[in-house]
Image (cartoon, rainbow, N blue to C red):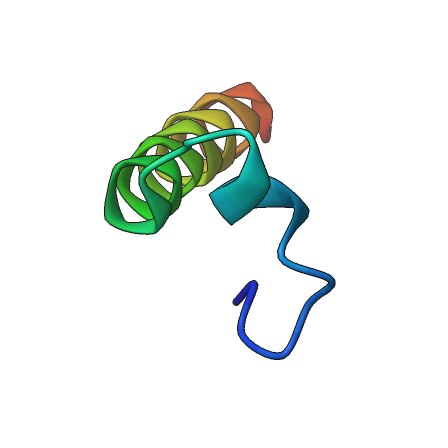
Length: 39
């Protein structure tokens, strides 16, 4: 979460929800890739 941050994301005009969704998707994808690599 970026709550309580310095407000840098807001200053850049970045939508927090969009960022959170992108991060969640990236983490999920990375986790799935790592899981598939397990023997």
